[in-house]
Amino acid sequence: MKAILYYVHDPMCSWCWGFSRTLNELLASLPDEIEVRRLLGGLAPDTDSPMPVSMQQHIKNNWTRIEDTIPGIKFNFDFWTKNSPRRSTYPACRAVIAARQQGEKYDILMTREIQKAYYQHALNPSDNIVLTELASNLNLLPEEFKKDLNSDETHEKLIEEINMAREIYADSFPNLVLKVESEFFSIPVDYNNSKIMLEGINNKLI
Image (cartoon, rainbow, N blue to C red; front, side, top):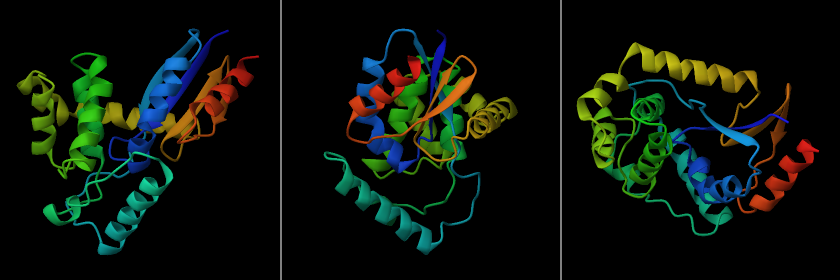
């Protein structure tokens, strides 16, 4: 039986950061016959406009909720005083694609670098200069990364992944969708218990 588990995320999605540990537990326990595909959902398009104060407060409240919901998850709230936040996650999404161009493993590695920079080190992954520094941390080829980061091809690939996510009704992040043969099943995300999600997946494989 052919099965694909789609993980739809955004590297600047705070709930995705909170989910990372339990996601890894889930992926490590999946049956061998399930292929995992990562899709970038693209939370917020490109903009140079400052993030409204009301939205900043909303996101800060989300960070507090996540800390209260998921044991061990902490955010560096210095981000909000050290940066000029913008509601723009497409640059970080393109950075994941640009990194992936230099090897499939860099999809996950760049996502983690962006999350650590944003949530632990109070850096702004909406800025290309920050993304370039993160690529350097991973020893990616710098000129190739810079070229791919802002290329039309990379942006088109991002839009393709966003559209694919919408086609499988993954309109919030993080999101898990299981494809079995030609059918798609939403797998409810549990931020603290991978076994519940694994049970839901296995039930669809029967």
